[in-house]
Each structure stands twice: as structure tokens, then as C-alpha cells.
Length: 324
Length: 242
Image (tube, rainbow over all chains, first blue to last red; front, side, top):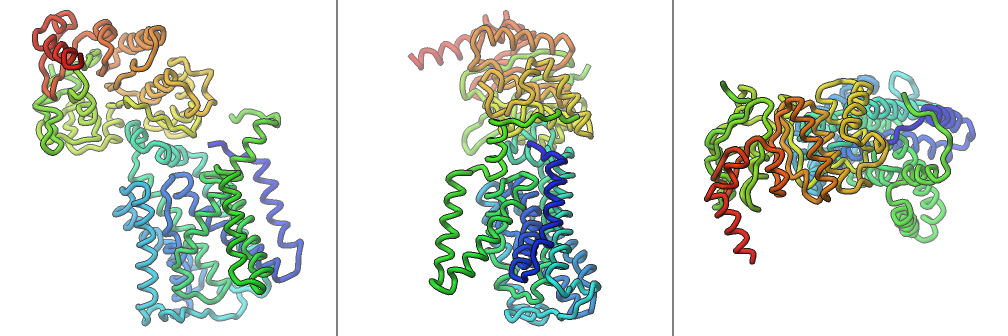
């Protein structure tokens, strides 16, 4: 649990704030928005999957709950997505508590499988409960720029709103990392029985982490819906989203503060560039290259990029005051 | 007078196998009791029953006048009953200090207080110089110390130690014995599972002997070694091995 130095954090935050000002090109701004958006969701995933080691492949469920709750409230009852976002977060947290209570006693692959099943159930529900969700055609959101409806004219504004959500997720992780809870989460990941034997209330801590992680993921789900202005079950509740979140964190560094953001900063541009350059020429080739890059990372930075950087820094140490 | 720990008629079965059968014993506050028996005698199963990782099929366990029935290991730890594991389980990717801090959090709320408590315990257990090492990199002897240190950080009234001497060389054994004697002198109640007979005879005030899940003898070390059933149980083992 090497904690990130405040100075490093400050530089990163300033860099992120400057990033949307570096371009006016809509394509690049789209990449920046998506990095912030998926970086925020991956940071939320990391609370449960990284720190606590509960490998979820069901976070699309929480993402979808967030997206659908605010969208349906907006189209059906003209409730502002800002409020709908809170409702979605609450619903996702409740959902995580109920499902978590049933599944979180399962360990390892059994837990992961149960989270996949959960997403599938929600996807099928969203497809067939047409009266509520509009079925597989999905939900289209009104495109009229206003702060009240969390809809904006330029992508640069979206970038800053997305950055706000990213910083919220990072701030929550940072606070958790430095608290008793942070230690509990890592202890559970490392040796669950040992943690119990020295008094860590395992069930409560896991459920709390699941609820918080679900909450933040749902918040990003709402932002996603307000950015693309159209959601549908096949994508919003797809395992692809869950896998993407897990991959970003694995590549960046499981259980590290900035790992998820670093993972998103690599995967999102890679994904989008490859698709743009190669997608038209040879369909599917971008997936092959994408896969190759993932293999390289797994081979040469197995513990994630953050751990790799820390290893190099240990060999060439920078003088540092010891924390109080 | 009632004891700190009262075990009454405790049995545990796994399918057709009775791992622990109608075991009774009591421990008073401040005692150091050795728990011995051949492999498969049910010692570790008994530890798991006491610490809440398993639940007895029959019988009851009382600790500090509280019936432990149905309480989780974490609740029992909070009450002051903490175990260690025979196969030590360090939080490998945390530092030694952080490992001990996790235990300290049972009693203190803030990381600052937990760190202070951890450094006190690390000094006590001779691990202070390793505070910032990753626990996964420690050799066996230090892992065993860490296992004990982490348990001590929970401020137990009763500490259950499962084979803390196994795998140590004679010098290391002496160090660990001296350490247990320090804890004992501070009136901590200790129940110690051990295979190394010479060691357990030296440190224990009283010994409980298990064989095939049953308590076959109990008493001062000098009495127990003369007990016919104990000699038979161990001799029988040795003949069977030969």
C-alpha cells in the first residue's frame, strides 16, 4: 500500500485540468472526455476489484442502473439528471448490498461468475420490460443544452464535467486508502481468514466497498448517458463494459490510486485510434493489435504500470521525507 | 471461580469422522496451557472451534462469561480471543508495519494511533528494523513473529498459538520461548499447540493431551509424561511409523 505523494497528485490534477485546453478538435476532445469518463468508472471499480480484491465482472449492471435511472426519470418525469444521478447511485448501492449479501460470501471465480450473471439478468430485464425501458431500441435523450439537464454544447465542457466526476472518484479512493477501511480492504484481499482472525468485520467491509463502488459507477453511468444521449440494453448492460473497466485497472495497477486513470489513458486512445485507422481498411484488425498490446503489458508489466514505475523509482530513488 | 475459557462437551464431526469428541477443559486468566497430541488428534480443529472458524456440533464454549455460540471470528477477536495460524498468513503485499496496524485497528480508530501501537508491538517482537519491509519477503522465523505480533496488536486476553515453534532452529526456538515467557509474565492467557515436546514441557504450566479427538490426559507436564495413555498414544505412533 504505497500511498501516492500529494505533490504527484497535484501535478496530475493540474495536468488533467490543462488537457482539454490543448485542442479544439472534436475527435481529440472526445478521446479526452472518454478518458475522464472511463477513468472515473475504473477508479470506482478499483475500490471493490482492486483494493478489496473482489474481482467483479458485473459493474456494467451498476453503470446501467445509473444510466437508465436518470434517463428514465428525465424522459418520463422531467427530473434533472443531477437528481436522477443521485437516485441511480442510491439504487445501485441498494442493489449492490442485496446482491452482495447473497454473493459476496462466494470466493474467487464463483463471485466473479455471479457478477456476470447479474449483468445478464439486468440486460434481459431492460430488453423485455419495454413499458419501462423502451426495450432494445433504448432511450433517446433530448439534445437541448442546459446545465439543468446535464447537456452541454461543446465537448470541452463535457470534458470538465467528466473531470469533476473523475476527481470525485479519485478523492473518495484517496480518503479510503488513508483510512482504517483502506487497510481492511487490502487485508481482506491478501488473506481473508487472517483478516477475520484479527478482527476485521469482513462481510460488512466487503458490502460497504461494493455499495460505494456501485454508487460511483452509477454516477458515471448517468454522465455517460448525458454525453452520448442514447442508451440501449445491448451496450449499457454488456459485459464488455465490465471487462473494459477491469482491464484498465489491471493494466494501470490494481489497488493503486492512479492506476485506473493510467489504464484508461492508454486503452481509450489506443482503442479509438486503432479503430479509426484500421477499422475501415481491414475490419477487425484493430482488435488483433489491441489484443497484442494487452499481451505485451501482461508480459512486461504484470503487476501494472504503477508497480513497474515504483520498481524503477526504487532502483533510482528520489530523496523523500518519511510520512508523519 | 469460573475460568476465562470454559469448554464443555465440545464435539465436531466431518461426515463420518469425529475430529473432536466431547472435550472439556477450563483455563484461568493468566495461565499458559500446552495442547499436544499426535498428528490428526484434533488440535487445530479445536482451535478453529474456539476462534469461530468452525462451529461445534455439540457442547458449548464460554469466554469471559459470554457464550460464544454463533459468534464470528471477528466478534470473538473483539471480545479478546485471537488465534494465529499454523500455516502463517501474512498480508504479503503490505509492509510488516501495515500488517500489525490491521490488528491494532480493532482497538484504535485512526491510522496514526494504529501506527503508534504497531511500532510498540514491533519493538516488543523484535521486528522494528523490518517495519517497512514487504511481509511477503520475510523468512519463516520472522513470518512467525509477525503472525504473533499481528495477533498481539488486537490486545487479546486469550491468545491461541498454533505451532509457532515449528520450522525454527534451536536458537530461534529459545528466542520464541523467552518471548512467550514475557507475555506470560504480563498475565496474558496463552493456549499453545506444539509438537516439539521438550519446548512445550518447559513452558507450560499445564498440558492438555488430545488423541483421536478425545482428551486423554490433563495435568502438570511432569504428570502427563508419566501418564500411561499418553505414552501409549505417542509410542503407538512411533511403532506405526517404524
